[in-house]
Amino acid sequence: MTAEHAAVVRGAPVGKGRVDALLAAVPARDREATRPEALARAERQRRRWATQVVVIDELAQRACAERGLKPLAEVPPDRVLAVAETDVADLGSIVAAALAHSPAARLLLAELEGEQEVPEAAVRDYYDRNRDRFLTAEALRRGVDPFGRVSSEDFVPYEQARAGVARELRRAAGRRAFFGWLDQAKAGVVYTAGHEHPGDPAHPDHEHRH
Image 1 (cartoon, rainbow, N blue to C red):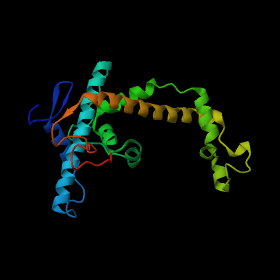
Image 2 (image 1 turned 30 degrees about the vertical axis):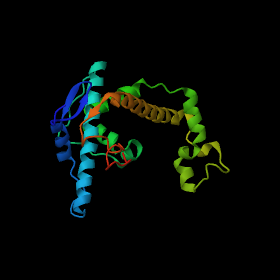
Image 3 (image 1 turned 120 degrees about the vertical axis):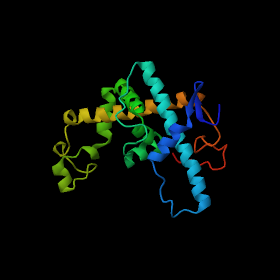
Image 4 (image 1 turned 180 degrees about the vertical axis):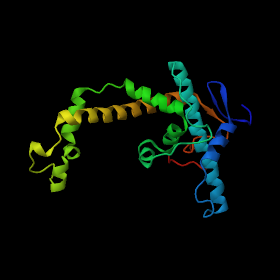
């Protein structure tokens, strides 16, 4: 591995140029308000973060190729789609950014989601345990307590809610499958110094935010 590589995936180098392009597409925040030493640390962590995003893209491209999937490169490689705050909260900033940056990662996630089977019993159980989510608009206007004295008319019928619940559960199962795939796929990745995971305790700047 030479100084031009950020990481090696299955024996193939991932060039630092890909990391630099992503860093250029995602400007650092609050540069002016940061002390020089803190800024230097933040930049080191930003490079490690960007390396993770690029590596996920590389792994996803390989996984798509193995599955015979062809991602559409609808965004130039030096640009990133907007990342929703809810995605950052649910997925962590690295995976959320990887999905925004990588058409292959998005395609793989969609494929994994489509493979998930959600049993009818799981859909019904979710509906029964989360009654507060299925109050009708009229019941909400009246301030009905979903766990108090209510009637069946205060709730969206199961038959109407079923498709949305199944879709939500399938989406959650697809994300779990994606994380499971990613954990396995990253096991053999080798990083150069300065490009390790931001939370890797082997380097002094490590932090556990994702």
